[in-house]
Length: 65
Image (tube, rainbow, N blue to C red; front, side):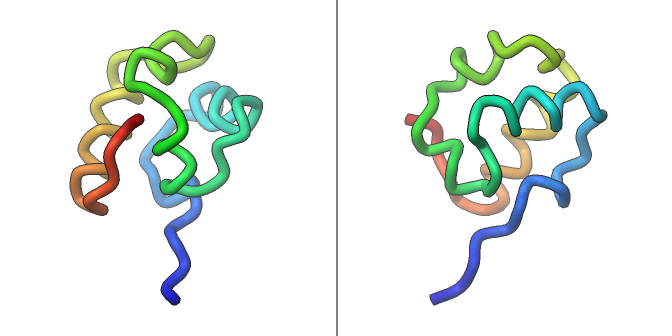
């Protein structure tokens, strides 16, 4: 079984990484528990972070809830 990439490979600023960590998101697979709006509404997640998250999840073939 291959391990899902951790969040650090995402090109995100520290506030966005902190917001994801506080939400319990430690791997790309963890995004499956959240809707896109859930992530967008986290304090520290801006437009650039969302673009990077969505692009990376598409690349990994991972979908939001």
